[in-house]
Image (cartoon, rainbow, N blue to C red; front, side, top):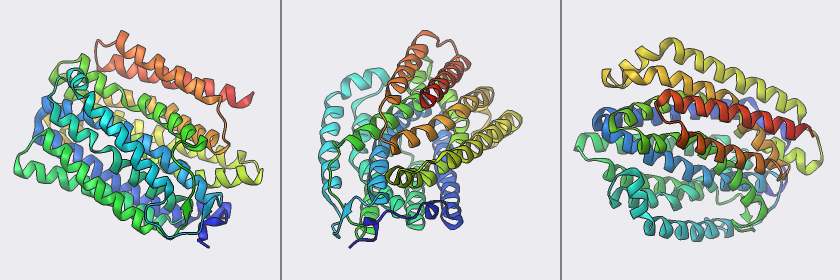
Length: 403
């Protein structure tokens, strides 16, 4: 029987070796991801970079929708809900492919409308649509490895995907191609990463349910709404700001939201523990308290760094053209402080198979999008909408959790 058919000991998910491997992976992955942003920002210029930023924000939402598949897969493996088997593509993966192809077809059919919103032709939208299935498969592979506490392989997969993304950016810059070729190149590299990840996780056991199960639906709705809140500002900036200002805002969002990525490791580490505790009927108040303190502390330090070092960071990384982004970046970072805690609360609620929190998450997302449409005078106004929306959502979730 596959080793994941028995729920793992809670302490394994928080082992020092697992945490260290994930930290190293996040370090490599973030360096590669920000290398991608810097290389493309310099090679494309502010106007085209604003378009790429909007497309990549949508790609982030797609990958996080796939992240719900990762969460469901990790929970199934950690809770011992798999069956013996060594299929590279199990039932869960097959159903994800079908669902992804349906969404891809819908996105391509809607590409004229999406193109109007982004003020761009059809080909970049097609490239974005082709990312959907590879992103889902990569997420499922990562979730299977996460649930089995194979943090070394999971870390290697994550870092490899990010390095592949950077390689695409460097190749595009050297050849001198634009946004369309970048999007098609990203789809190809992500597909390769997903295939390798599924092969690495082939012996963990088969997940016998499909993507339309309650666990998957709950996680998908939760984390998709969350990352819409985190990412929607960039495509809205593309829609409401002129080309150069949209490019500056996209750069500010890249560095401003960088403070959220390291705390996200905490959520990855604690989720298998939360899932195991839920199955065993145990409480996890202590680990949540420590996770909240660590995540909050990391984001506060990150925001302080942006406030103090913003100008030289943008001058060195992006160049003089992007200096106006420095004052907006730390303001976006402030919004990431409550968002980091919200992220942890979502992992906890999903692990406990709760549903009521989804109402507050939906209300918060709609309110934020309405704020962007109503208040779009500058990048600082968008940052203010982010801060207010994130803080209000955190308060609502804490009250809901206590009742």
